[in-house]
Length: 351
Image 1 (tube, rainbow, N blue to C red):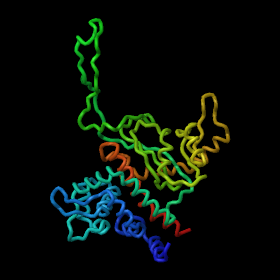
Image 2: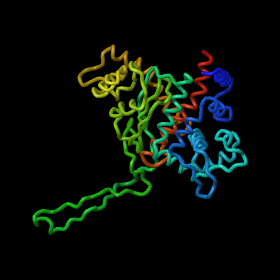
Image 3: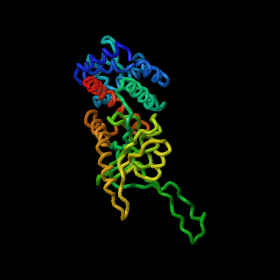
Image 4: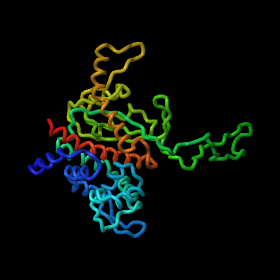
């Protein structure tokens, strides 16, 4: 790390971590936006808004979506807030005499990055920078899943319609053909979400299968419908991450299976999945002690989920469909890692 960067990090330690102008300054010191902008420009083509306003750089719009995530704003609210707050306009790089992108520009930008699967690459690029700054250290990997509920759930009784009506003379007179039925899709329902029952409560939405480091910083996310089993997606989320051989992978007993044991063995990773009792076979004292040791670290990924819900109003679907929900999950991950970073720098400076 260059000398001037070290001075900048020392300056960071003197500032309080808040989502306001001093926090924005910290983020601009930490992050080199140039490679992020290059990644965005690969898939985003600037254009005019629906009202004919001028085009805007992709990095400006990306920073606006960060503000949107940190503050839990709608597209309309984001436009208003960047117009009204000097700290917001400074962070995104819009001079006071220049017009702010309207809600339609923000929506199209997010859609284009979603279609080009850019958010996963941006998360990876940002995490690489955090690794270079010794903020993100992969001494261990934590894996767990969390549900994002959607308000666009089916209500009332199921209704069906006949999708194919067969002529009676196509069949022998003694055979009665049964019409094919299809469930009617009611308006205002997210048809890609699914029901799941967790802790005795029904949820309709999506599930984010997440891997973090031991401090809870997010490394990778796989999004599925809520009814997908956690146990089936351990390998999927680990495939998104560069992990050194011998790194321990910790998860709760819901991930324990012969297949997942083989996955970790194949990847040459240490198996730290909590043990679970089998029928007519209770856990040994050694296994109970093992589980307690893992739980002392594994809780940090649950803290990550809880913090995203508290800080950014996460845990609730803002968009419709699997792909857009995956983008929401990735944006929340980027926002969370950046929000935590100045505090980790401060902690490192105090050691």
